[in-house]
Length: 388
Image 1 (cartoon, rainbow, N blue to C red):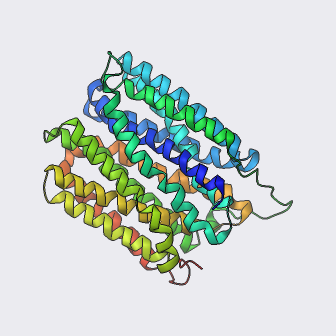
Image 2 (tube, helix red, strand yellow):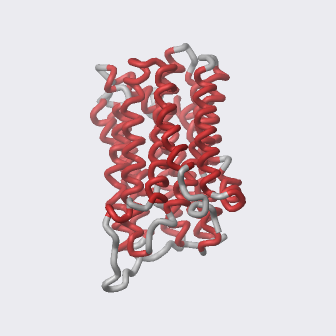
């Protein structure tokens, strides 16, 4: 496997460490600073809004200027966002804090292109393994992110969570240095007169429709339940270290399977792996519905992470079969836009959803969406998604 893929896996680990750190503390900070219930998850929603804002421009920018330029700009946005969020927290300003999470969301949105850059750094026979390896960088994030949230509680006198953003500044600084040192794919040269299909033509492909739906719903449901978990656990009198531990194991569930997801795709086909992901998401809902003790949350979040892994990596692999080189930015950009719009809606609805539906109702809400993905993938021609 090329060194670029390994380097992108480390960069992904740093990016996800920052993301997990934000997930661990942002809803709790929102609870401290919000004047109304709907504002509790506003910082998380702003993070996803920044992510969505970045998706289409980042894909087109990198096609024109190359991956390195795009990734450097993304990490600079991350540094700025961490600093603005820290100022908002110290000033107890929800608006300023949300602006900071919006800017870090832009950085996370740019970083979602790491897995596509990994595809370009190796031949097609290694694609499934390259996607899995980059996503496996999240295993390191599962250790760094939640623990950094705990260790940094005493780094700043103004707030128990302010120190986390000093840690976030450090993560983005290291990621920036790594990107500067890595050999990354250059800009894509499109042949003169090469035809690029319209969005309407592209989405008439059942394979593309299924891939985007799998990514959207798998990610949206995962974010909805993950964002609601700290709020639900706090409501049921679980302390913060227990909540951080549940989130940590959730992230391990998200990324540890990456070490073998690529092999499973090559052995059994992408269609089967996504179907297993849907079944695992349903298993997560069943665990969460069975009680409100620590271990109920632990098992629910662990299975939620594993289900996301199978649906998201499977969807990415399906997506890579749906476009020509000249259409890369268009398809990758619209996919990221739709997937993270679903994630943003999940994060925005999480706080209000716990209030209106309760933890049980929120989990039941997820079931029909998971079944929809299962149906779309099941209906695919078996010969289309199976890896060569």
